[in-house]
Length: 535
Image (cartoon, helix red, strand yellow):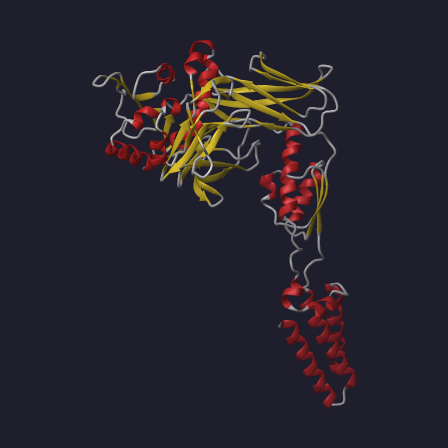
């Protein structure tokens, strides 16, 4: 509006001089009006499209490029790019990317596990031209696990069973065929005391399998309401040490459900429907029609004289009646090497029912106690699921670094106050992309363990890596984050001011000369007009 007003005033003044026959004065005032309009329009012309160069291999150049990135129209990235938190601070811009050729490394491991769980570390390399090996070392340098990759294998897995509940910083070391260290760095692990399971068990008759399961749960510290029918009027009961008002799950044998009265069966299924998961030990099932009517579970006799199922490392006997998954709401949750299911599950209103199709695990209670405990842990993970988990912490960032924003989430918490390392409290707010979780962002100040707590949540620890830890893994994380940013930024450049305002033609004309030229032309024309008027 102002450029048009300046041009209109100059035009009217020129017409005034023309009516008086003062042609030179009319030309001067018209030139002054045009110069003033061009000067005002020049201020509205946006800067030329800036291409910011982000050279991640040169820290000084990277800082300069980040300073220009906010005003840039395009990005030129050299190297592996930025971390996810840094890309999230930049708008989605078209980019040119030249990935770095350096070797990369990917690590995958849980940050925390419960005592009794097996810790697994997976190491992946993009290519391995020669055999290589990996070691997992304790804090005192003792080798806890070792694995070797022959030929061109690019992935290795290391497993270890932590003996105690504590926070520890293990070390992973990669070596080539000659024994030279390729990469080495910390592997933080927080081993937490297991949360005791609260289970309700009902069995129609005693069995070695039920006894072995009871002993296994008792040794793990589970709170049990356990009842086994010994005879028509005699039962063995194990009452819990505390009131079991909300058990994590129900464990029954199939014969117990088959012997229930209709009202008792309806009450049991109603309890499941309210959200309590139930695990059925199917080895004692004998009435296929009952399960078809009660739970829409189709059972068929097992084929063969002595059918077996390979469940993890255990060779177990298949139940006499096995589920037929076709045409029902049941799905296989775990299968053996031949694809035959040994654990099936279906939803039941708010809860779920799981069916265990194997028996005879009591044979491993003495010969393979660790393998048996790990297998039952898998069974309970699949059948109980999140019902026993409650509120838990989640750390989406695989490698927190000092000074870099990292995200902390709490599952099962709608909102709250987060305290990290004794610093000021920050809000935990719900996230639309993380259902059932509240998240907050923190900036760790130093490497090491960071204590994290919130109201209504048990405190935990987050390990912050040092800036020099695992350079190859850092390159891999930056490469992955840059790949995701490139996919997100496949959009046209931001619309310029000219296209939004419709003044592309005059603006481009005003941009033919720099602003100071139009100002000088306006001043010269006005001085010449003043000189002529004074004369």
